[in-house]
Image (cartoon, rainbow, N blue to C red; front, side):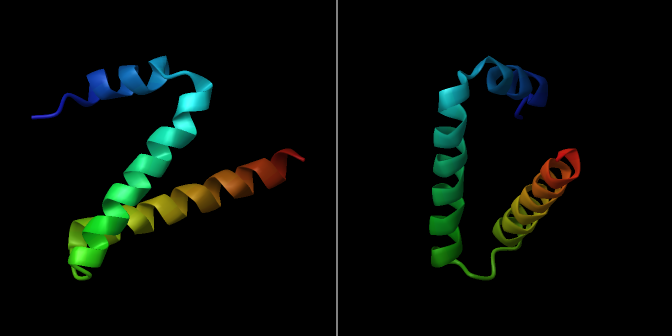
Length: 65
């Protein structure tokens, strides 16, 4: 089982310039998974959550201006 606390800590320890690389790698992994199985519920949910997170972040950034 994955320990989310350890994963959260590892994310926090990443250098700022490594964050886009991690996000890109994660996106590519799920994109490949979706291309192999377009009906994969977990993959579809990942992209829905990612889209929601991007939208919320963009909205927060607009509200700060």
